Image 1 (cartoon, rainbow, N blue to C red):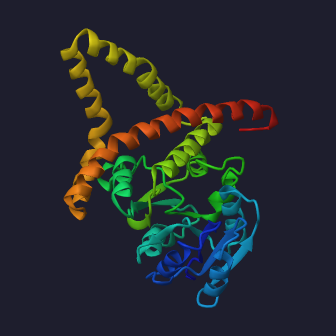
Image 2 (image 1 turned 45 degrees about the horizontal axis):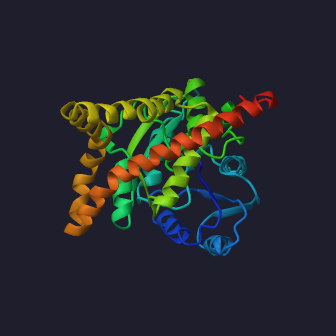
Length: 329
């Protein structure tokens, strides 16, 4: 039987600094993709030059689509791909040498007319540089041990799927610029697609380098949640925590200090313990002063992230309401 053609797709825009490492990691794969399709959304740096140079040493095709958001870029790349199996990743990452091999195995080994597996979820790990990024990774990213394989929704920085299921669900939602991969995942599940988990298919990515960049990221994520009508209960709980529970705890602190202290300890436990549990093994790579700084960053990151989400979510909700009459799902 002829092996399935495997296409690796991703989008770029002004990724000259991070692109060489990704391309080198693709070239080092134990299972080389049959083709690589990259869509450039309008880069103004050296991104296209790097891609053109790489096309001389690997089966890489470049599509240029100025102004395309990441959803449209992914759809364009997949539509242009020859493969029946699509591996998706993002710019700004680097891939373990066995990434393609691990992702493709459950799909390539099942060539039946009615396959048992349609989508494979890979995993991702942080590649932090310095104290802040280490604390940010611990605060925002799950450990492999925290993942429930049957419920895990893959990120499009590390996943594979059959091209025909992408066609069946209509591809990525081009009306979304953030959270688009979650909507794609939900559509695949709703269509009855079967998922497998490949924990050794690992993409490494660098967290945001500073607090301002992190704030913008989480603001945009929450705005995407509002646009897509995602995680409404989680956002309600967050608003309730900060706008109702926090004032009550402050009042209790002045009225009954011991009760207030107990409430602060309980709240801190629920909000910060998972982050510190992840941070503990990461501290071994840091000097003592850096360890203290990382520990101090965690509550700051948690609060700033929550504020960013509380500001971004209603912006997305307003956008959704304004666009409902335009055929929005």
